Length: 212
Image (cartoon, rainbow, N blue to C red):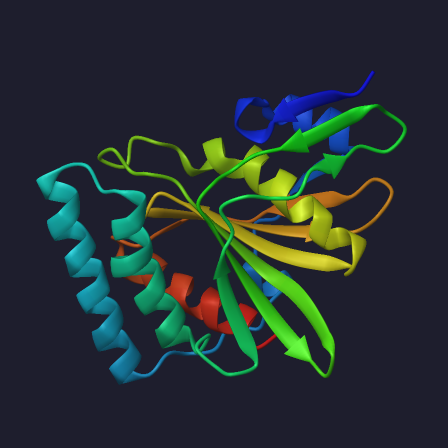
């Protein structure tokens, strides 16, 4: 008899056991990415995004839609993602994930952006962005990790690596996910958009992922 789980109701331990993920910590973005200096213009734009977040944060609850429209979209545009060869889609539902060697399916729905890059006729989803509704940023970004891993799992069937980030608008938790037996995900240092140096590194990471 087949058993179906809702991705939103799984724990991280469930995901690790069902999908065989292994966790590793990585304290350095530069071990995986080449981070370049940002321009004065980018500094100014980033400062505006940072100040805008502070204004909304002090006013109270920030919705998923506000996070995507006011903060994620400007960051992605500034990083260069808005190009003809890159397609950004809102994935509200995912196809069922069948777990190997078990009569188990995982399905679900969430607010996530899939960044697809076309190379000739081949299309790969190289970057997934999970947005968690912020209630005065009380939600830890790691709470979205298990959902992010579930949704990126299918991408590993067609490519060796995929990047992901889960965010509540303030904190950004990047994850580097690798195909393998078992598949491995690396947690990178968490970045905070409200802090100047951290927000600069945040934009550098977005730009570097775009250039992959």
